[in-house]
Image (cartoon, rainbow, N blue to C red):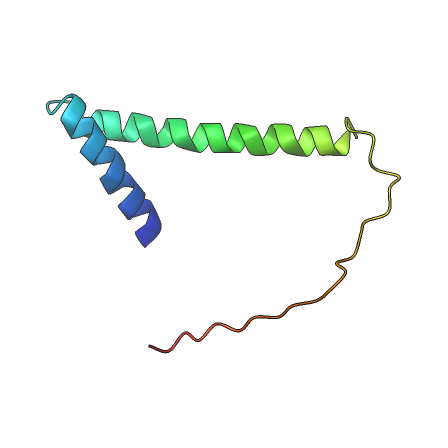
Length: 76
């Protein structure tokens, strides 16, 4: 979970600059708030798609005109 630790370190930096005494509590609060914002957005977007708010469920899904493949060299 290195990415979570890195994200919390960035949040902790903001919390310390705001209030050093309560930095740990602020870090946890900001982390939970960020998680809730992302979860709420995901929930609402899935609801809007499932209820077909945009009216696009009967449209055919377009295929790309051309296909491009890329390879990533992971060895440095």
